[in-house]
Length: 262
Image (cartoon, rainbow, N blue to C red; front, side, top):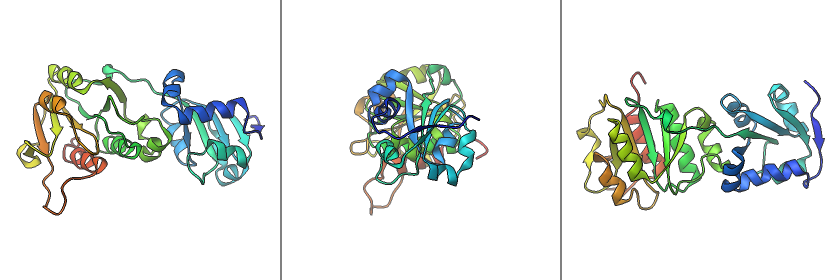
């Protein structure tokens, strides 16, 4: 492999482009690309997404010589350039520009298991739930309006590469998506604290498919998507806690309704 080109200026056009990808969801959507950061994360993402450009410091390359074997254009960057690309104060000196995987309703088929999120705004929770969906054998994650970007730096760190291992589909308004799923024979369950059934009353056999819908951290699902679903379910808890974090609650539900054989 040819020797990586060197970049020493924070004002380099490629560095500015990569930094803009990290900062702007609209720019990521326009370019259909995203920036990831991490010694382990970048190689992991390269297994499921096209790696277009890879940036690393000399120190990072010494720690992981295998970086030089990854595909795409490669650039050796100075530490102060890495600081510009970094999302947090300390960084591992490895950054990749990836092509965003494109998934639509063709991924949603009868008999599958799906997670739907509405207005889950915390990147850590969205990333955690994508990671849990991949771990527990779900076939796709449906992101309705108001969710954190699945390819923002914080979300990518939380999902640990799962965003390219399980299809992530933008579906717009959740009630309309639920109606479409139900039209395909998929049973839709809304996670709700009130006017809901405990998980023990629901069962786990859904031959036509299953979609679990989870709402925002503070308010949960809106009334409209709850009404659109077949049933509302809740996780039984003691009176020592009123509710669970969205990432934890969703992960518990995903484990409960995990795919056969897990």
